[in-house]
Length: 259
Ligand code: HEC
Image 1: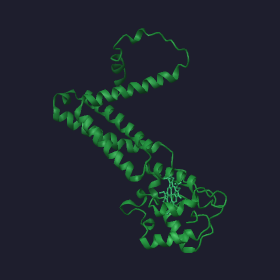
Image 2: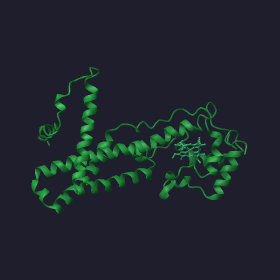
Image 3: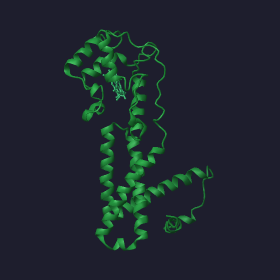
């Protein structure tokens, strides 16, 4: 690992770029950081392209990460972030491995094994590494300042079961919301959800609450990812419960557009 630095940089100077004068005096540190980022991206790309097995392994891992992200409702920017870490770690691991064991490069099968093992190891390591990101661990629940005047207790209970996980200040954070990337997904849903509708602050800020009936009728809420594969079964309403919920929301001021 330690000997990797000098060998790489020596080979970069290909076409007279050394002669280019330091023209712009603007800022010294930020362009070099961008340059370094671009260089890393380029060498990662070159390394992946030069090794079909590595590309195949990376493609598989990327597919898995993307599907997983869709499954838990992860924002694309978070998925991209994870993909970036997995890719860079995979390439670094693969290069380190083949440099330490040069014989690997002479056998296609060995190279293939090492490539897939590198990607697998890098993916596992990435899952540990991303735990460093603190985003999503605050688990905030600001004070409740004024709920809607619910039509009845059943209506409130159905909304609590189906909507409070994202649209209230009484969020019950599941255990996995301590583990990235679930923590990121949950935090983001709660942030976005509260911003749009917060039943706990309805009195002062009704937001889009008057669209509640509409989004349920259209099957948009609760979001598909929330109840997929038996998750949050209390929010997976039967047709009767949906009818009851909609009737209750209509009878509650401010939660339907008079329809
Ligand atoms: C897993 C989180 C989650 C759950 C559970 C959830 N929502 Fe949402 N909701 C969101 C997010 C995120 C948004 C904002 C982004 C969007 O429109 O998709 C939103 C938006 C809304 C909006 C605004 C829609 C618009 O077009 O502006 C309404 C109304 C709404 N939700 C009602 C509900 C109701 C009613 C329930 C319960 C039956 C519910 N939601 C359950 C996450 C959730």
